Image (cartoon, rainbow, N blue to C red; front, side):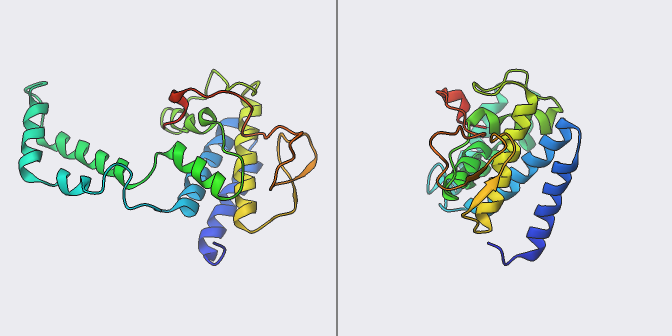
Length: 205
C-alpha cells in the first residue's frame, strides 16, 4: 500500500490541511474526503458485484430498458429517456461497489480497527453535499467538536495502519494518552465507535 508515492503525498497533504484548519466544518470536510479516499484504496473492489452477478447484463437489455422507461413515463408526461439512463447508471454504481458507509466500515475492519459508528460516517453527505453539520450527535458523542475529533482519530488510525504501524499512537479524543491501535485497550472507549446500539437506518449511506 505504501509504494504509490503520489497517492501518499496527496493523502498526507490533505490530512495536514485538515489538522491545521481551525474551522470545524473545514476539518470535517477534509477528513470525510480522506475517508472516501482511504476506504477506496483499502477495500478496492473485492467482489465483482454487490447486488447480482448478471445485473449489468440485465440492465443493458434493450427490451427491458424500453419497458422500464415506459413504466417511468407513466409517472408524468414530462419524463425523459435521459432520466432513465441516469437511474440505470445509479443502479450500476450501487452494484459496482459498497455504499460509502459500508466501504469505510469494511476498510476499518480490514485494517484491524473497530468498526466505526454508522452515523459518524453517514453524516458525510449532509456536510459535503449540503454544507450543513449534523445537529443530532451519535450516542456517546457530546458535540460537534467531539464529532470532528472522532472522525479525525479514525482517519489517522487508518493511515497509521496502512503504513504498517503496530505500536502505540496518540489520537485525538482518546484521553490524551498513547494507546496501541491493534488491539485497542478494552478499558478505553474507541473515539469513533462509542458503545451504542445502531438502528438499520445507520447502516447505509
